[in-house]
Image 1 (cartoon, rainbow, N blue to C red):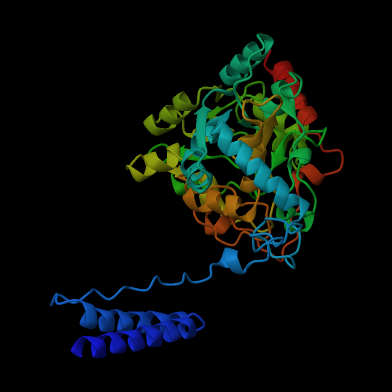
Image 2 (spheres, rainbow, N blue to C red):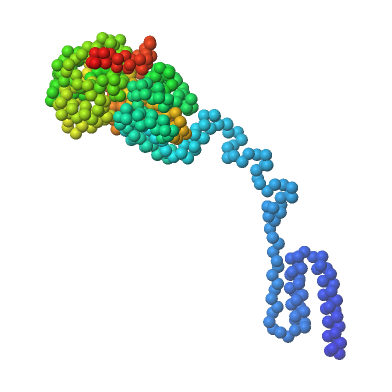
Length: 457
């Protein structure tokens, strides 16, 4: 009896289970999982005496849809449209100016070259301190070599005859440029190398046009200049030999003629002092008449070696120097160290009643670009940077010379080491040597040299 009741209950249970199974097949997955677990417990209770419960099965989680799964099969995976340029520049950002592109290309190529080689007179030594600004900004090493212009130009000409091209820039006086570098085919025109708008804009330069000191108006770029006063005045003098009171009566170089002082000077036939002789030759109050009188003076010692001239003035071998080949800042450094010397031009400048012409024929005021340079891109980069406001300001501020000539850029306002008395009055209308009618630096220098040879054969 008991057995029959058990079998009937089991049959009903199996029928119930079968009915529930068919319904559950249509149920959601979560319900199926729950009911499956319940059914398992019921069957275990009915058919097993094992007390260990059957583990509840863990449902396999449905993976979250990925970006790739949501994306249509024919849609590209990249966010950027296929025809959109990959540049970072926004579509509405204006295109770069040609000069900006040229700057970037020149800079990259110059950094690949890695160095810039500059030679010349004393200015090539002077530039070492402010050239560091260029190196720190662009990572390009600037190597300089300065000294006797005759020796340097001789070496360069010999190298070129042998097919060797080892330099990029010259910082030399006008005499070296017009006498040797241009005739020797060493230089190339500078204007085609300039592309920065602030460099090519002539309105930013005094006097509103390009200041060239070579007759070709291509090779000797004058970037700075000072008012030389009423004629190029005498320079340093020994205070043990001459008193300030004795120097004060000098008003022009005519006042130097007839003095029995022991004067040392570089001749116009030499490599130094070219700027002073160009001024003397072209100045309306001096010219051939004054030069002939000065050349005839028996108490003038003619010498070209800069260190010998400096040493002679300090030791008292000479009273005063004129148009001397000097090393930039050397007199100033020795004066600061206690040498008995004074700058005649400094003393006389305050007495000038009218400004003289702006000159600039020395190596500290001129730059020339070498043809077939060793580093053409570094040469081009340096010229555009140096002739910009930033480059010219660096020359004022970071130089070691106490009184560099003032830049001819109008927008350079930080004077740095420029002597306040040498700063131009922005309202004044200064005459310029290179703008004088018929000005020809090469001819002026050659006229002075020819006259010197005639008077002192």
